[in-house]
Length: 93
Image (cartoon, rainbow, N blue to C red; front, side):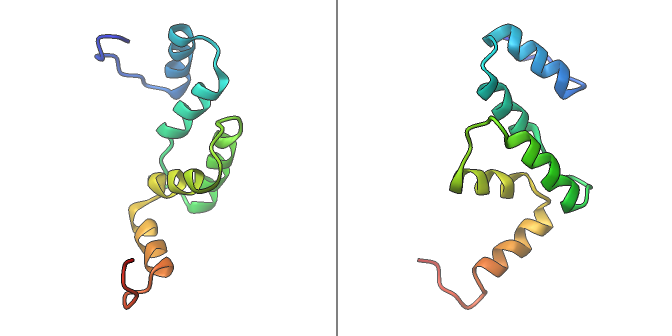
């Protein structure tokens, strides 16, 4: 892991090696799992279910959790959500 040259074909393999390297810190493992999560081509409902599962035990709450969710979701959906949050004529503060 220290060389940075390893690639993992599955999240499970990555998490096993992470546990070996850093111990059984469940919160760190959950955060790593959460950070690897991407919506990609899945429908939003499936992504939300997996995101909820991944967040349990991560320690992420409030705004941090919302920002992580938006970061991992499909770029087109994220843009639409941003437009709804801040209509085009609303100035940035």
